Amino acid sequence: MTAPEEHVPQPADAAAMIEVYYEKGWTDGLPVVPPSEDSVGAMLAGAGLQGEDVVGEIAARHTRITADKVAINAVLAGCLPEYMPVVVAAVKGICHEDYGYHGPSTSTGGAAVAMVVNGPIAARLGINGEDNVFGPGFRPNATIGRAVRLLMMNAINTRPGKLDKSTLGNPGKYTLCFAENEANSPWEPLHVERGFKAEDSAVTVFATEGSIQVYNQLSNDAETLCKTMADAMANLGSINIVGQQNIMAVWAGEHAAVFRKAGWSKKQVQQCLFENAKRTVADIKRVGKFPLPIKPEDEETYRHVTRTPEEILVLHAGAPQGAFSTCLPGWGSHSVTRAVTTRIETL
Image (cartoon, rainbow, N blue to C red; front, top):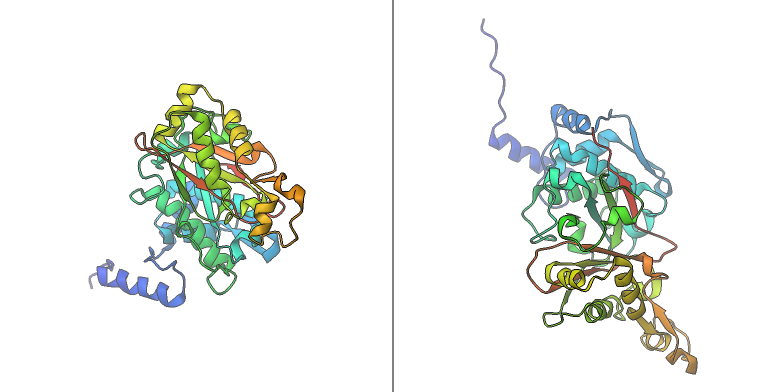
C-alpha cells in the first residue's frame, strides 16, 4: 500500500476558510490570512515568545493579552514573523495605564491607534516614512497596524456596536502605522525626545481622531507655517481645545525644509505652535463647548490645545516634495489618555 499523498491546500480551500472567518466575525471587514499551527509558531518565534507569555493586561476590561493571541491576529493581518516585535511593543503600549485603553477604544469619538515607529528596525523592515506615508502600498505599515486592530476586536471584543461605540470612526481604525523619516528630519527623532537612545527601536502609540491635511505652498517662513498648522489644531470642532491632550504635528518635505533652513529646533516649533494653537474662552462658549455665560474677561482669556508645548508631538514624515503637512488631533483629555513610547525588543 502506498502512503497517501499529503494534501496540498487549493485556492478553493483558502477561499472557504476566509468565508468561515467572516461568519465567525473574526475580520475587520477585509479578508484575513487563516492561521495555522506553523504560521502562529513562526510568529511567536519572531519575537522569541511562548504562547502563554503575557504581553500586557487591560485592567479596565479584566483582560490578559497572551502572546498566542497577538501572534494569531498578526497572522490574520498578513504580518511577516519579523514584524512581530513591533506588534508586541505596540500592544504593550496600548496596555499601558497612561494610554488608558478603555477610553479611546470604547468612546463615541472613534479614535484610531496611531503607531509611529522609530529606530533601526524601521528601515530594516521597510516601514514607510516617506511618499504616501499615510496611504496604501507598504506591507509592514498596513499589516502591523491592522494586527493591533484585529487583536482589539478579537481578544478584547472592541467591535462596532459592542465595546466600540464610535459614532463615525475614522479610516485609521483599519491601520495607522508609519515610520518617522529620521534620515531627512531637521530634529531629533521622536523616540529620542521621549527618552530613548538613537540606536534603540521604539514605537509610540497615540489615540487620534483622524487627520487634518495642512496646506501652505507660498510660505518660506517657519513662524508662518506654524501659524498655519496651529489654526488646524485649534479649530472649534477640535476635541483638543477642550481636552488638552497630546496632539501630533507631522511636517512633510517642503515644510520640513523651511525649518531646516531657518535652523529652528523642535522646542522652537513646539513653542510657536503652543502660542498660536489657542482660542478665546468666549469663542469656545459661543459654540456651546463650555455651556456657561460669556464674561467680559473671556474675550481676553485663551485656552491652548495642550497644557504645555512639550505635549505637542512634532516629527517629520512624508515625501520630499509637496507643500503639505498633517495634524493628528488627540482623543479625550490629558487625564484619560496620553501617548506612550515602548522599546521594541528584537532578537
